Structure formats: C-alpha cells, structure tokens
Length: 444
Image (tube, rainbow, N blue to C red):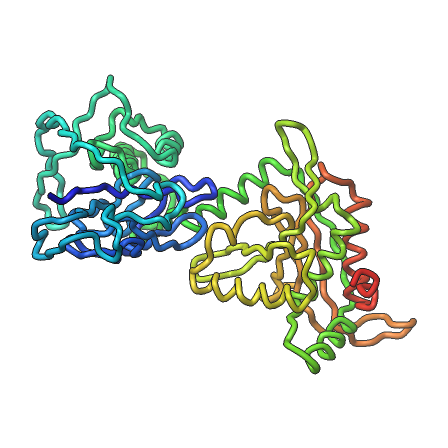
C-alpha cells in the first residue's frame, strides 16, 4: 500500500510568514523525485523554487497560481512506496532515491531531514451542510458556491498574520467572513472579497461628490511581494528613525582618471565599486555609522563587520543585495561581487540571505540622471550614502574657473547614533577620497 504524505509550505527563512504561488512545476499524477522542485513561489524578498522532500506520485495540489499561502499550509500530497496507478501513472517505489523512506536529506528550513514517522490517517468529521450562496457571473447568471459556514461565536480560522492585519486595517470582523480554504481556513482572497463587498454596499448609499468622471479609469495595485516589502520597510524607517541628511559637492575628476588608469591595466572596475571601497575605509574611521539601535535595551550596537548593501532596480522593483564582509575586500573584489549580485537580482535568483544582513547601504541614484536626493535609511541600519550623477560643471581650481567632473554626495544618518560632527566628518572623508584618491593609500 502506498503511503500518502502531505508536504507543507516550509519556512523559507528570514522571518517570512507567507509566499505567493508563481508557477506550479508539476501536475497531479506526475512522478516526482526526492528534492525535485515542485513549485516556484515569490516571497517578499526573492523568487524561490521549493523542492519536495518525498519521492512518489503527486496526488493533490493546494492553491492556484497567484494565491498566497501561509507557512505551514499544505502545498501538495505525494503517494510514496509501492502503489497502484494514480491518474494513469504507475510507480513501484520512491522516485529518484534508493532509500525506501522516499524522503530527502537536503531540505529547506521547516521540514524534517529523516524518514517520516508512520502515522495513521485521520478521518476528518464531515462539515455541516451549508446552503450554496449564488454568486453573480459576468454574464448575469449565478453560480452556486459553498463556502465554510460562518460562526459568529466560534474561533477564527486564520493562520496568516497578514490576513489578520489586512482585516484590522479595514475594520473587518473576521468572524463574519466565510473561509474558502481547506477546513474553512480564511485566505487573503476571502478578506479582499469581503472588503470589496463592504465597499460596494457603502457606495450604494453614498452621496455623489466631485471626483473622477464615469469614464475615468482607476487602477488599484496591491502592495504585495517586493513592492509591499519595500513599502513596509520604508514606512518603518520613517516611523522609528530620527534621520537627518547632509550633502556636499565633490570634484570627481581625479577619481575618474584613476579609474581609467586602473581599467587600462586590469579587469574593469566600476565607479560604484570604487565608492564602495571608499565607504568601507570611511566606516573604519567612523564606526558609529556602522551600527544599529536596540530600542528595547536603549543601546547602540556597533558592528565589527561591514556588510555593504547597494540599491538595485529590477523588473520586480527595488532590491538591496548585500556584499558580505566588504571591509575585507579590495575594489576589484567588491566590483566582482556587485556584478554577480546584480545579475542574480535582474534574473530573480537572489536568495533571502543575499538580501538581508546589511549594515550600511550605498545608493547610486545618479544612474537615473538625477543630481541629488535625501535617501531613506534601510532599517535597521544607521546610515545610507547617496550618489548623484557625475557630470561636467564649472569648478574653481587654484583660483581659476575650470570644467570638472562633479558629483553630489548625500548622507542620511540616524541622529541617535551620532551627531552632525561625526556625520560631517564621514561625508567629508568620502569627498576627500573622491577628489584625491591617493588619500585611500593610507588604508590599503
């Protein structure tokens, strides 16, 4: 007899609580091998292919593409061991493994590495019958559906904290929402549908006010995935961090000449890599800015390692890959790592670990053709250096007017970790290195 095992959405790490199904990689009836990717999901940090720790035949899938599932929710079930044909597929044992257990030793966080303990199948009590609720379709006809019964006095069948938060933000009583998930679980789509229904009911009795005309199209874009994660992080930064910004214009002519000389005799080094190396040297002099604030303990935590984040724009939105241990790297090594992480970001292959753990961020918004900005600190870091475009401008050199390559540098810092003197000293040192790259020789 085959044993049917349930594979649940594993903990993908970094505190993530849910993921959106982007693409199923298997169908019901497919034979899967141990550790074979079965579904591609998108978290708030990255796209991830989720491997199944069991080998056998897929007997069921839970969730359509585009649906969000909380960690711990069922993904699929797999029949392992000797079994009868399932939807036309016949197997005589676990696929892709010589282990009779049919389980994997190479798994993600959140599910076991050994053979599953034998367990008896539990018989779920049949739910109380519920009268179908007619739902109007686009053609005007109605289609009966049977959501889980609503019990105003019973427990709320919600797993995801994001679903609770969404309901709370809209003043929605979850006890009055019918869950369409397994065993009556209330899903995000259920809450969104209830919110839309409530909005429509309020609109029926609303008094017309001046606004967009009937022909004006209105598009609503959900804050979810990367965009939602960015929104949450930036909002938290503004709420919790008392930030201040200082800036300075710097003559980058000598830096550009030094880069040209370096690239003439070796691998290409980008301006961003040079600026990143300058940042690590500046942080060694001003370690106050490589820190974070523990609000509960009321302590400033200074960090010994510099994990340098850099802002990268992708089709999925803004992400901040992190160059780990940047303080131990030279400009060439930092540049190679920036290139590798940027390519992974544009291909949607960054892992959550590559997007977290930063201690200081470098933001080159000059690539968008702008001169200056006031960056928002990447919480829970203490500072961010912004870099505008480098362009030809009139500049006074030795008392005479000349055309030089000028860049504006801006530093946003957490005023709790230092005062303006420290922030100004950091920014001035960075500007000095840009104007006179030989200053860096002291730290190489």
